[in-house]
Image 1: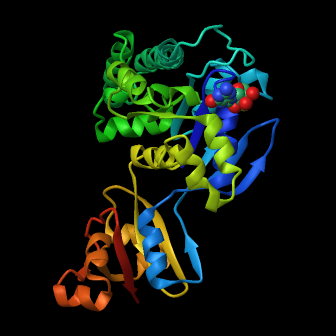
Image 2 (image 1 turned 30 degrees about the vertical axis):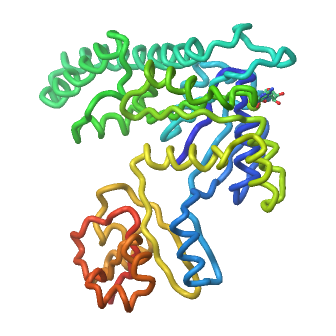
Image 3 (image 1 turned 180 degrees about the vertical axis):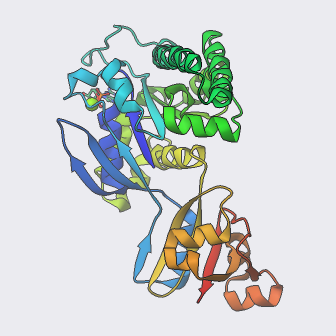
Length: 359
Ligand SMILES: Nc1nc2c(ncn2[C@@H]2O[C@H](COP(=O)(O)OP(=O)(O)O)[C@@H](O)[C@H]2O)c(=O)[nH]1
Ligand SMILES: [Mg+2]
């Protein structure tokens, strides 16, 4: 799962990325000419709790890949141009950093601070790329239709693409649509930008901490739809925070009246929007959060751990995290009847603790 950090120049993308990398990054590949990619641990309080109980040798968080691919050192993709559009297709979701902080020493390509205008620029530019893609594709379909092969399939595709085209022309984004299985398959091939989940992170200054809820509410009223999350954050504070030793962080945040770092919130939001969830495996060696798509079966989830577990799956022993926390031990879970044996068709829930029985 890859997330692209996008936004206008000087909005705080690299500041955000560098904070993430310091706090949760396992491995950073700094390649200033191409991309800056980092693998980020998805924070999870439930996993922290399991680690306290089982005291394992290793703790393994779920991970997600984040890329500061519009990095300022590559002026060719510093705005939403064609090159941006080509690269942006590679991502499963975007975090759009929008500048809300005033600072006369930091230039703004539009000269003034205007959160709504900058969000609109992103919406409009990405819609234009999608529209031009759809129009080209529709022209090709017309040509293919005259050849008379695969007529039925082409007509079906044409119908879908025409609908998407009209949605965009009416000023809406494709995120708002409910997709059929067929449409999902098309999107897999096309990677339309306005269909990708979007997190809008408004980068505010410290002096806006008190008004941040009000500012965010206004932006949400205008732009919140399906597959969009809108969150405020304070890039400069987060950056300083990430450089502090862990034990000093809480004090530092409290000085600003903050209770938690916004980075965890943003990463978890991305994880949710991508339709991802976690199940856990626990033991003395390792406590681990595994990433699966919502709706996956026990057998498919077992296959994420190991293909052998998929092929030789017998049953899954399952306890939900909440039940485990309430009972305090597996033995007590068995007494209370919340420890279950599930077959391969069982739909895994977010927070299930599983042990796979296999041949
Ligand atoms: N005052 C202030 N400056 C910031 C903030 N966030 C970023 N900056 C500064 O703005 C400049 C551009 O930030 P950068 O992260 O490089 O932006 P990018 O072009 O989007 O990658 C840098 O000098 C940052 O230190 C902020 O919240 N407040
Ligand atoms: Mg940058």
